Length: 261
Length: 157
Image (cartoon, rainbow over all chains, first blue to last red; front, side, top):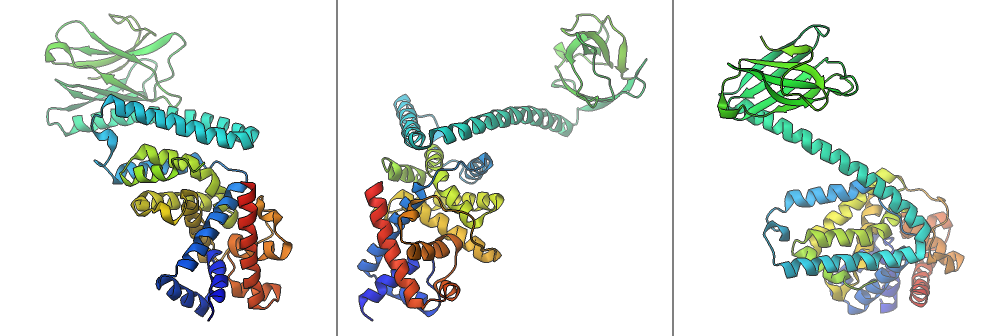
C-alpha cells in the first residue's frame, strides 16, 4: 500500500467515518508511529476546530457549569489553591489574569456576535441572580436544619409541644430546646400576621416573660424561628407566642396564639 | 485567541478550579453548538458537554501543546463524545437545517460527505450506500473536502 492511501484513510478517520477492516488497519499503522499521518490528523483536527469556531457561539445551560463546579469541588478536596492562604501578590496576579482573560474572551466574541450574545448574557445574568438568591435561601434553611439536628443529638435537648389558643385552636408548634444552646421553634397552621404585625416568641421562667425574637409565617401558615439561649442558662418553664407590632416589644401586649403547657 | 489557552490547561492539571472556569467560559460556547447539532436534544447535549469538560479537567495533565491547540483538543473530544452518543441511541438523522459555518465554501459534493460523516455520524460505508457512490469516491471527497477546509479556515481566520 502506498502512503497516499493512508492520506485518504487519515482524512476519513479524522471525520470519524472510517469503519471495518480499514479502521483496524489504519489504527495499526498509527500505532506503528507514522509522523506523516499524525501530522495529517493534527491538521484535520485544527481545521475542524476552526470550523466549529466559525459558527455563532451558543451559551450552554448554566446548570452544566454549576454541576461541573460541584463535581470538581466534591472530588478534589485539598488539591485546591484556595485551601490555604496565599500571598497577596499571587492573589492580585490571579485576579488580573482572570480579568484579562475574561476581557479578552469577551471582547473577541462580543465583537462578532454582540447583539445575540448580549441578549444571552442578560438572560444568563438574570438567571444567575435568581439561582444565587435561591441558593442563599436554601443555605439558610439548611443551616437551621443542621443546627436543629445537632441539637436533637444532644441528650439534654427537650422537645416541647405548643398548642393553639384563642382564635387559632388548630395552630400547632414544636420547640427544640437546649438549656445552654437555645433552640428552634417550628410552627404550623398560623394565619399570616396582619400588616405591621409579627409573631413574637417568649420564654417564661421564674420571672417575667423574656422576649425571644419575632418571626413571620409563610403562605402555608408555617414558620421557623431561632430562639437564643436564655441569659445565665435559667430554666424555661413555658414557651409562648403572641401577636405584636412588627418590630417586637419588650413585654407582651397582644393576644397569645400559641403556648406550651 | 490561543493566548493563554495552554496555560489554562496546565493550571487545571495542577488543580486550579479558577482556571477551569475560564477554560469553560472560553470553550463551552464553541463546542456546545457542535454537540447540539449532532445530538439534537438540548438535554442530551448538556450531558455530553458536561462529560467532555469533566474529562478535560481529569485529563488536563495529559495535554501536550505540541500535539494540537486547546481548541482542537476540546473540539475533537466533543465531536467524539457526541457521535458516540448518537450512535449509541441510534438516533442519527439529517436535514436539520443549514450548518452555519465555513463549510459553505466547499463544493457541494465535498460538503455533503463531510456533513454526513462529521455532523450526522454516518460511516464511510453508510455514506457510500446512501449516495450510491463507490467507497473510494466517498473517501476521496472527504480528503479533498478536508484539504479545502484547511485552506478556507486558514485564509479566513
